[in-house]
Length: 153
Image (cartoon, rainbow, N blue to C red; front, side):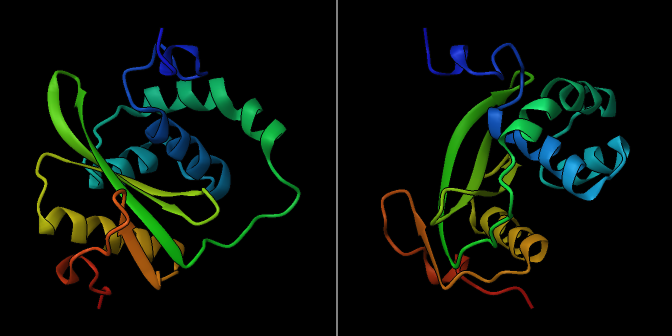
């Protein structure tokens, strides 16, 4: 038995963070399911709008129960991690940014693990939060290389 098998997301093909992000965006920004599918596709995650509908129906009550009375602003110090995952039989790299308070900022899935993928991920994360991190580290707590620390123009 793994930690994932006991989570609310067990039995779903997509990683927990992807499902949580899609539901959070739907609840926060009231986007259509097609718009959410498009936003996820821009991040390398191809999912049908009807699947997002199922996720929203399944997990909205959990968000309502867990929602704090006030939202916190995204922090200035981000931790970036990546993992190699299999989605629909294809191996991909999943990048994730978390701030110093443990909030998941963004998730991006890419077929490649290179500077272009990390730059795209960080650019989208900065644009969606309107926060430029003062420090971004990887999971070994080293500062990210300068090529991946660029601020979007």
